Length: 474
Image (cartoon, rainbow, N blue to C red):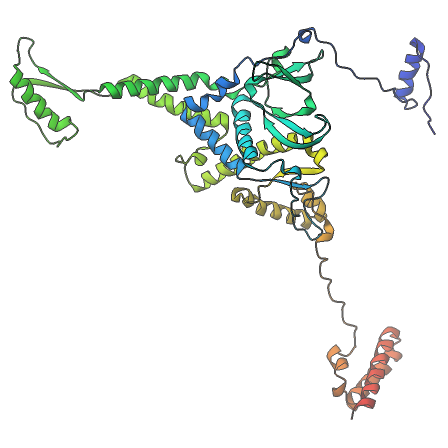
């Protein structure tokens, strides 16, 4: 029965309605929610990215550390297979074992075409901030069974905004012809953005903030290459006096002598000129030293932005413990986070249609298994403080564990009845003697005299067993 008081519209109706809601007498009427119309989005056919995705992707060619970080992430993420499990089912069976994955329907995430697309969309996501897959369906392009996924190049993909700023379609133009896809036809996700208005629908590319460092690094590398091609003298030999002139023979002799010291086949040692020549050894210019530190800064900036630690790129780290900590943080904060983003987007797009839940399997990654020991230790402490087993596992993020999977703790044995004969004496009936029977009868008499009814009944049972044993004895 609805106990809400119906209030008519109008000023007094709204006033009494507010008073009634404050007193808990009325229920607010739900209002239809609509996005406000933003003039900035009106008449905008689609929004092109202000920073070219192709330019962002080309950074893997411009800088070796961008390529190294990108290849590391792609290799680590693709080594972990995507498994399919029955939708809404637990990942553990009734005995606490992980259930076996089911075959992926339609083989939609298998084969060389998918492996290539998977590697490419990881690069798209890291460098451009957005990845997108066109969902190929059987029959109806909107409701048919998914049968494949095809990569959409981010350079040719642009969102089409609605009047409130929401994305109502995706415009794809790869061959001069614009094709509009409904949101449910495109599986996509993207990074954060900062602009307001239509430009905010496109993500921020990490390469944009690294561009100045990457260009500076490329300029330093080019300068070093030109210097290496031209050659650079190690020392300068000249007369001590401006008025002194050297002949060709003397110049050749000095060149040969100093080449033995500084040349590629130098023998070192001490060279004595004795002819009034002056030697000036050329060192590194300050700008050359600054170039080296700039290149190191660029490398560190790239690794920080792309979230790849030095240990993953086989660079020197302080010690083994530091390397392990870096790798655990990298796998949890970078690789697993990316995998969760891909899994969620793909499940939202095709999971319901395939009646499965897709999940990246990290069970073969050793750096992620080491943390389970600490989890189990904390769970054991939670249970020791009185928390239930299932609640302790759920608190540590393992919410697929059922308390019925654990064996019941062993019960303590019941205390022996006072004055009762040992169980071994009762079980071994062949050893019962008349002396045992007399002793039991004596104890029975004492128990009856002292009013110990419980003990007397127990002793009486023992006496009856002894009599039966004597009767059956040969």
